[in-house]
Length: 401
Image (cartoon, rainbow, N blue to C red; front, top):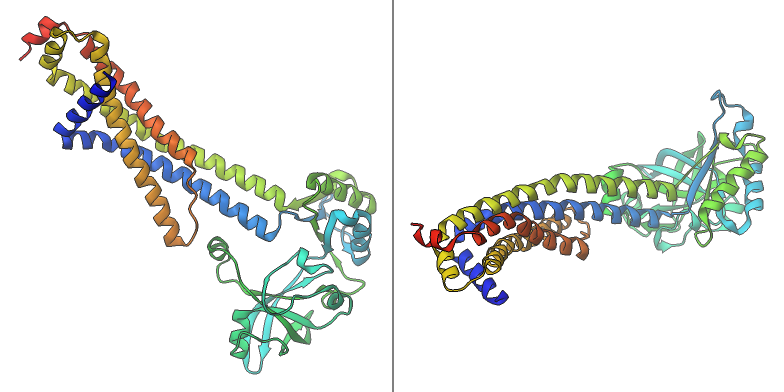
Protein backbone atom coordinates (compact mmCIF):
# COMPACT_ATOMS: atom_id res chain seq x y z
CA UNK A 1 0.00 0.00 0.00
CA UNK A 2 2.88 2.38 0.72
CA UNK A 3 4.23 1.99 -2.83
CA UNK A 4 0.74 2.31 -4.25
CA UNK A 5 0.23 5.54 -2.33
CA UNK A 6 3.56 6.87 -3.57
CA UNK A 7 2.45 6.16 -7.15
CA UNK A 8 -0.86 7.93 -6.50
CA UNK A 9 0.99 10.91 -5.01
CA UNK A 10 3.23 11.35 -8.04
CA UNK A 11 0.27 10.83 -10.39
CA UNK A 12 -1.55 13.67 -8.64
CA UNK A 13 1.57 15.88 -8.89
CA UNK A 14 1.93 15.14 -12.62
CA UNK A 15 -1.75 15.87 -13.19
CA UNK A 16 -1.26 19.42 -11.84
CA UNK A 17 2.33 20.23 -12.85
CA UNK A 18 2.17 24.02 -12.65
CA UNK A 19 0.26 24.08 -9.39
CA UNK A 20 2.63 21.53 -7.87
CA UNK A 21 5.68 23.51 -9.00
CA UNK A 22 4.32 26.76 -7.57
CA UNK A 23 3.62 24.90 -4.31
CA UNK A 24 7.20 23.61 -4.29
CA UNK A 25 8.59 27.08 -4.98
CA UNK A 26 8.39 28.17 -1.35
CA UNK A 27 10.37 25.09 -0.28
CA UNK A 28 12.86 25.55 -3.13
CA UNK A 29 13.58 29.16 -2.16
CA UNK A 30 13.73 28.35 1.56
CA UNK A 31 16.03 25.32 1.28
CA UNK A 32 18.36 26.94 -1.28
CA UNK A 33 18.64 30.06 0.90
CA UNK A 34 19.45 28.07 4.04
CA UNK A 35 22.03 25.89 2.28
CA UNK A 36 23.66 28.86 0.53
CA UNK A 37 23.90 30.93 3.72
CA UNK A 38 25.11 28.10 5.98
CA UNK A 39 27.61 26.93 3.34
CA UNK A 40 28.85 30.49 2.89
CA UNK A 41 29.45 30.69 6.64
CA UNK A 42 31.26 27.30 6.62
CA UNK A 43 33.34 28.43 3.65
CA UNK A 44 34.39 31.63 5.41
CA UNK A 45 35.24 29.69 8.59
CA UNK A 46 37.32 27.22 6.59
CA UNK A 47 39.13 30.03 4.77
CA UNK A 48 40.01 31.90 7.95
CA UNK A 49 41.16 28.67 9.61
CA UNK A 50 43.48 27.97 6.66
CA UNK A 51 44.78 31.53 6.71
CA UNK A 52 45.64 31.29 10.40
CA UNK A 53 47.32 27.94 9.76
CA UNK A 54 49.36 29.48 6.94
CA UNK A 55 50.33 32.53 9.00
CA UNK A 56 50.86 30.42 12.12
CA UNK A 57 48.45 29.69 14.96
CA UNK A 58 51.34 29.97 17.40
CA UNK A 59 51.97 33.65 16.66
CA UNK A 60 51.45 36.05 19.57
CA UNK A 61 52.74 39.22 21.16
CA UNK A 62 52.81 40.57 24.69
CA UNK A 63 52.64 44.14 25.97
CA UNK A 64 52.06 46.11 29.17
CA UNK A 65 49.17 48.42 29.99
CA UNK A 66 49.34 50.23 33.31
CA UNK A 67 46.29 51.40 35.26
CA UNK A 68 46.97 55.06 34.44
CA UNK A 69 47.96 54.28 30.86
CA UNK A 70 51.27 56.09 31.30
CA UNK A 71 54.32 54.58 29.65
CA UNK A 72 57.79 54.79 31.07
CA UNK A 73 61.00 53.02 30.12
CA UNK A 74 60.02 50.15 32.38
CA UNK A 75 56.98 49.43 30.20
CA UNK A 76 59.16 49.19 27.09
CA UNK A 77 61.02 46.03 26.14
CA UNK A 78 64.73 45.95 25.38
CA UNK A 79 66.94 43.47 23.54
CA UNK A 80 68.01 42.17 26.93
CA UNK A 81 64.36 41.45 27.79
CA UNK A 82 64.02 39.52 24.55
CA UNK A 83 67.04 37.39 25.36
CA UNK A 84 65.84 36.73 28.92
CA UNK A 85 62.41 35.64 27.70
CA UNK A 86 63.97 33.39 25.06
CA UNK A 87 66.23 31.76 27.63
CA UNK A 88 63.46 31.30 30.21
CA UNK A 89 60.95 29.71 27.84
CA UNK A 90 63.37 27.41 26.00
CA UNK A 91 61.80 25.15 23.38
CA UNK A 92 58.28 26.34 24.19
CA UNK A 93 58.97 29.39 22.00
CA UNK A 94 60.35 28.87 18.51
CA UNK A 95 60.82 32.58 17.80
CA UNK A 96 61.26 35.72 19.92
CA UNK A 97 61.87 39.22 18.59
CA UNK A 98 60.62 42.76 18.08
CA UNK A 99 57.94 43.66 15.59
CA UNK A 100 60.09 45.86 13.35
CA UNK A 101 58.67 47.27 10.16
CA UNK A 102 59.18 50.38 8.10
CA UNK A 103 57.45 51.62 4.96
CA UNK A 104 60.02 52.94 2.54
CA UNK A 105 61.23 52.84 -1.07
CA UNK A 106 63.46 50.32 -2.78
CA UNK A 107 65.51 51.80 -5.60
CA UNK A 108 67.41 50.07 -8.39
CA UNK A 109 68.76 52.55 -10.91
CA UNK A 110 65.93 54.88 -11.78
CA UNK A 111 63.17 52.53 -10.70
CA UNK A 112 61.47 52.71 -7.31
CA UNK A 113 59.00 50.50 -5.47
CA UNK A 114 57.04 51.18 -2.29
CA UNK A 115 57.65 48.31 0.16
CA UNK A 116 57.32 47.33 3.80
CA UNK A 117 60.69 46.30 5.20
CA UNK A 118 60.16 43.71 7.95
CA UNK A 119 62.96 42.69 10.31
CA UNK A 120 63.24 39.05 11.37
CA UNK A 121 65.10 37.69 14.40
CA UNK A 122 66.83 34.32 14.78
CA UNK A 123 64.99 31.28 13.41
CA UNK A 124 63.21 33.57 10.92
CA UNK A 125 61.22 30.83 9.17
CA UNK A 126 59.28 30.22 12.40
CA UNK A 127 57.83 33.73 11.96
CA UNK A 128 57.79 33.98 8.16
CA UNK A 129 58.22 31.04 5.84
CA UNK A 130 57.50 32.29 2.32
CA UNK A 131 57.68 30.13 -0.79
CA UNK A 132 61.20 30.80 -2.08
CA UNK A 133 61.48 30.54 -5.89
CA UNK A 134 65.04 31.89 -6.32
CA UNK A 135 67.93 31.92 -3.87
CA UNK A 136 67.24 31.29 -0.19
CA UNK A 137 65.53 32.61 2.91
CA UNK A 138 67.37 34.51 5.63
CA UNK A 139 69.10 32.34 8.23
CA UNK A 140 70.52 32.74 11.75
CA UNK A 141 74.00 33.60 10.45
CA UNK A 142 72.56 36.56 8.53
CA UNK A 143 70.87 37.87 11.69
CA UNK A 144 73.88 37.26 13.94
CA UNK A 145 76.28 38.81 11.40
CA UNK A 146 74.03 41.85 10.82
CA UNK A 147 74.30 41.31 7.09
CA UNK A 148 72.63 43.74 4.70
CA UNK A 149 70.65 41.01 2.96
CA UNK A 150 67.08 41.11 1.68
CA UNK A 151 64.42 38.70 0.47
CA UNK A 152 61.80 40.27 -1.79
CA UNK A 153 58.80 39.09 -3.75
CA UNK A 154 59.13 38.30 -7.44
CA UNK A 155 56.74 41.09 -8.54
CA UNK A 156 58.96 43.70 -6.89
CA UNK A 157 62.03 42.05 -8.40
CA UNK A 158 60.45 42.12 -11.85
CA UNK A 159 59.45 45.77 -11.52
CA UNK A 160 62.90 46.83 -10.31
CA UNK A 161 65.19 44.68 -12.45
CA UNK A 162 63.05 43.46 -15.33
CA UNK A 163 63.63 39.82 -14.26
CA UNK A 164 62.19 37.73 -11.43
CA UNK A 165 65.52 36.17 -10.47
CA UNK A 166 67.18 39.15 -8.74
CA UNK A 167 69.49 37.07 -6.52
CA UNK A 168 72.88 38.80 -6.21
CA UNK A 169 71.57 42.21 -7.27
CA UNK A 170 71.60 45.21 -4.93
CA UNK A 171 68.97 47.76 -4.03
CA UNK A 172 69.14 51.05 -2.18
CA UNK A 173 66.73 51.97 0.59
CA UNK A 174 66.39 53.95 3.81
CA UNK A 175 66.33 52.22 7.20
CA UNK A 176 66.05 54.30 10.38
CA UNK A 177 66.52 57.44 8.24
CA UNK A 178 69.87 56.22 7.00
CA UNK A 179 70.72 55.20 3.44
CA UNK A 180 71.39 51.48 3.18
CA UNK A 181 72.36 49.15 0.37
CA UNK A 182 70.92 45.63 0.47
CA UNK A 183 71.89 42.57 -1.51
CA UNK A 184 69.08 40.29 -2.64
CA UNK A 185 69.67 36.72 -1.44
CA UNK A 186 66.21 35.34 -2.14
CA UNK A 187 63.02 35.93 -4.09
CA UNK A 188 59.68 34.57 -2.88
CA UNK A 189 56.31 34.07 -4.49
CA UNK A 190 53.24 35.64 -2.93
CA UNK A 191 50.91 32.74 -2.09
CA UNK A 192 48.20 34.77 -0.34
CA UNK A 193 44.70 33.46 -0.89
CA UNK A 194 41.92 35.40 -2.62
CA UNK A 195 40.59 36.36 0.83
CA UNK A 196 43.91 37.81 1.98
CA UNK A 197 44.36 39.67 -1.30
CA UNK A 198 40.90 41.20 -0.86
CA UNK A 199 41.57 42.14 2.78
CA UNK A 200 45.09 43.34 2.04
CA UNK A 201 44.07 45.61 -0.79
CA UNK A 202 46.94 47.22 -2.66
CA UNK A 203 49.30 47.56 0.30
CA UNK A 204 53.08 47.51 -0.17
CA UNK A 205 54.86 44.19 -0.63
CA UNK A 206 56.98 42.85 2.25
CA UNK A 207 60.76 42.75 2.06
CA UNK A 208 62.45 40.66 4.74
CA UNK A 209 65.78 41.74 6.26
CA UNK A 210 67.71 40.75 9.41
CA UNK A 211 66.18 42.47 12.43
CA UNK A 212 69.70 43.13 13.68
CA UNK A 213 70.25 45.80 11.00
CA UNK A 214 67.09 47.62 12.08
CA UNK A 215 67.65 47.63 15.86
CA UNK A 216 70.61 48.28 18.12
CA UNK A 217 71.59 47.14 21.62
CA UNK A 218 69.77 50.10 23.19
CA UNK A 219 66.63 49.82 21.03
CA UNK A 220 63.30 49.33 22.76
CA UNK A 221 59.83 48.40 21.70
CA UNK A 222 56.39 48.30 23.32
CA UNK A 223 55.80 44.66 22.33
CA UNK A 224 57.67 41.39 22.09
CA UNK A 225 56.62 39.09 19.26
CA UNK A 226 56.97 35.35 19.64
CA UNK A 227 55.89 32.02 18.16
CA UNK A 228 54.72 29.25 20.46
CA UNK A 229 55.56 25.62 19.83
CA UNK A 230 52.30 24.18 18.46
CA UNK A 231 53.16 20.71 19.75
CA UNK A 232 52.71 21.89 23.34
CA UNK A 233 49.78 23.41 25.23
CA UNK A 234 49.74 26.93 23.78
CA UNK A 235 47.33 28.26 26.40
CA UNK A 236 49.72 27.25 29.17
CA UNK A 237 52.69 28.62 27.23
CA UNK A 238 50.96 31.97 26.81
CA UNK A 239 50.22 32.15 30.55
CA UNK A 240 53.84 31.28 31.35
CA UNK A 241 55.05 34.08 29.08
CA UNK A 242 52.77 36.62 30.76
CA UNK A 243 53.80 35.45 34.23
CA UNK A 244 57.50 35.71 33.36
CA UNK A 245 57.07 39.17 31.81
CA UNK A 246 55.18 40.38 34.90
CA UNK A 247 58.00 39.20 37.13
CA UNK A 248 60.73 40.48 34.81
CA UNK A 249 59.20 43.97 34.49
CA UNK A 250 57.94 44.10 38.09
CA UNK A 251 54.29 44.53 37.12
CA UNK A 252 51.06 42.99 38.28
CA UNK A 253 49.93 40.08 36.09
CA UNK A 254 46.69 41.93 35.28
CA UNK A 255 48.73 44.64 33.53
CA UNK A 256 50.33 42.15 31.15
CA UNK A 257 48.27 41.81 28.00
CA UNK A 258 48.66 39.52 25.03
CA UNK A 259 47.17 38.93 21.61
CA UNK A 260 47.52 35.63 19.80
CA UNK A 261 46.50 34.14 16.48
CA UNK A 262 45.03 31.19 18.40
CA UNK A 263 42.64 33.45 20.34
CA UNK A 264 41.76 35.51 17.27
CA UNK A 265 41.01 32.34 15.29
CA UNK A 266 38.71 31.10 18.06
CA UNK A 267 36.85 34.42 18.25
CA UNK A 268 36.54 34.66 14.46
CA UNK A 269 35.27 31.08 14.18
CA UNK A 270 32.74 31.65 16.96
CA UNK A 271 31.55 34.93 15.44
CA UNK A 272 31.17 33.49 11.93
CA UNK A 273 29.43 30.39 13.30
CA UNK A 274 26.92 32.45 15.30
CA UNK A 275 26.32 34.83 12.39
CA UNK A 276 25.74 31.91 10.02
CA UNK A 277 23.24 30.32 12.43
CA UNK A 278 21.31 33.55 12.97
CA UNK A 279 21.08 34.43 9.28
CA UNK A 280 20.29 30.80 8.43
CA UNK A 281 17.47 30.81 11.00
CA UNK A 282 16.04 33.98 9.45
CA UNK A 283 16.20 32.38 6.00
CA UNK A 284 14.49 29.26 7.42
CA UNK A 285 11.37 31.36 8.07
CA UNK A 286 10.67 31.01 4.34
CA UNK A 287 10.33 27.26 4.95
CA UNK A 288 7.34 27.95 7.17
CA UNK A 289 5.85 30.07 4.40
CA UNK A 290 6.43 27.16 2.01
CA UNK A 291 4.79 24.80 4.47
CA UNK A 292 1.71 27.02 4.69
CA UNK A 293 1.57 27.00 0.89
CA UNK A 294 1.61 23.20 0.90
CA UNK A 295 -1.21 23.11 3.48
CA UNK A 296 -3.27 25.52 1.39
CA UNK A 297 -2.88 23.53 -1.82
CA UNK A 298 -3.54 20.21 -0.07
CA UNK A 299 -6.80 21.61 1.38
CA UNK A 300 -7.82 22.63 -2.15
CA UNK A 301 -6.84 19.16 -3.39
CA UNK A 302 -8.92 17.48 -0.68
CA UNK A 303 -11.94 19.54 -1.69
CA UNK A 304 -11.44 18.79 -5.40
CA UNK A 305 -11.06 15.06 -4.77
CA UNK A 306 -13.93 14.62 -2.30
CA UNK A 307 -15.81 12.31 -4.66
CA UNK A 308 -12.64 10.22 -5.22
CA UNK A 309 -12.27 9.86 -1.44
CA UNK A 310 -15.90 8.68 -1.21
CA UNK A 311 -15.39 6.08 -3.94
CA UNK A 312 -12.21 4.75 -2.28
CA UNK A 313 -13.96 4.45 1.09
CA UNK A 314 -16.96 2.76 -0.53
CA UNK A 315 -14.58 0.20 -2.06
CA UNK A 316 -13.12 -0.59 1.37
CA UNK A 317 -10.35 1.95 1.95
CA UNK A 318 -9.86 2.60 5.64
CA UNK A 319 -9.39 5.98 7.30
CA UNK A 320 -5.65 5.37 7.76
CA UNK A 321 -5.29 4.57 4.02
CA UNK A 322 -6.71 7.96 3.03
CA UNK A 323 -4.61 9.67 5.70
CA UNK A 324 -1.41 8.03 4.46
CA UNK A 325 -2.27 8.81 0.81
CA UNK A 326 -2.54 12.55 1.39
CA UNK A 327 0.36 12.65 3.83
CA UNK A 328 2.64 10.99 1.27
CA UNK A 329 1.47 13.42 -1.39
CA UNK A 330 2.30 16.41 0.83
CA UNK A 331 5.67 14.91 1.76
CA UNK A 332 6.46 14.16 -1.90
CA UNK A 333 5.78 17.77 -2.93
CA UNK A 334 7.86 19.06 -0.04
CA UNK A 335 10.75 16.59 -0.58
CA UNK A 336 10.85 17.32 -4.31
CA UNK A 337 11.05 21.02 -3.53
CA UNK A 338 13.76 20.27 -0.98
CA UNK A 339 15.85 18.30 -3.49
CA UNK A 340 15.55 21.01 -6.16
CA UNK A 341 16.31 23.69 -3.55
CA UNK A 342 19.34 21.72 -2.36
CA UNK A 343 20.72 21.47 -5.90
CA UNK A 344 20.07 25.17 -6.45
CA UNK A 345 21.72 26.16 -3.15
CA UNK A 346 24.83 24.05 -3.86
CA UNK A 347 25.03 25.53 -7.37
CA UNK A 348 24.82 29.09 -6.02
CA UNK A 349 27.65 28.43 -3.55
CA UNK A 350 29.81 26.65 -6.16
CA UNK A 351 29.33 29.34 -8.81
CA UNK A 352 29.93 32.13 -6.27
CA UNK A 353 33.10 30.42 -5.08
CA UNK A 354 34.36 29.95 -8.64
CA UNK A 355 33.73 33.62 -9.49
CA UNK A 356 35.56 34.87 -6.38
CA UNK A 357 38.28 32.21 -6.69
CA UNK A 358 37.70 30.33 -3.43
CA UNK A 359 36.86 26.70 -2.64
CA UNK A 360 33.25 26.42 -1.48
CA UNK A 361 32.50 24.19 1.52
CA UNK A 362 29.17 22.34 1.45
CA UNK A 363 28.87 19.84 4.29
CA UNK A 364 26.91 16.64 3.53
CA UNK A 365 25.24 16.92 6.93
CA UNK A 366 23.74 20.29 5.95
CA UNK A 367 22.36 18.81 2.72
CA UNK A 368 20.91 15.77 4.55
CA UNK A 369 19.28 17.92 7.22
CA UNK A 370 17.84 20.26 4.56
CA UNK A 371 16.19 17.45 2.59
CA UNK A 372 14.90 15.64 5.70
CA UNK A 373 13.62 18.90 7.18
CA UNK A 374 11.78 19.73 3.96
CA UNK A 375 10.01 16.35 4.06
CA UNK A 376 9.16 16.82 7.75
CA UNK A 377 7.71 20.27 6.98
CA UNK A 378 5.58 18.65 4.27
CA UNK A 379 4.33 16.00 6.70
CA UNK A 380 3.67 18.56 9.41
CA UNK A 381 1.70 20.95 7.25
CA UNK A 382 0.05 18.11 5.30
CA UNK A 383 -1.31 16.44 8.41
CA UNK A 384 -4.37 18.66 8.81
CA UNK A 385 -5.56 18.35 5.18
CA UNK A 386 -4.89 14.59 5.30
CA UNK A 387 -6.92 14.17 8.50
CA UNK A 388 -9.72 16.23 7.00
CA UNK A 389 -9.78 13.95 3.95
CA UNK A 390 -9.59 10.78 6.04
CA UNK A 391 -12.53 11.81 8.26
CA UNK A 392 -14.94 12.50 5.43
CA UNK A 393 -18.17 10.52 5.54
CA UNK A 394 -18.23 8.23 2.44
CA UNK A 395 -21.96 8.83 1.77
CA UNK A 396 -21.58 12.63 1.93
CA UNK A 397 -18.39 12.38 -0.14
CA UNK A 398 -20.15 10.39 -2.90
CA UNK A 399 -22.93 13.04 -3.04
CA UNK A 400 -20.33 15.82 -3.49
CA UNK A 401 -20.42 17.44 -6.97
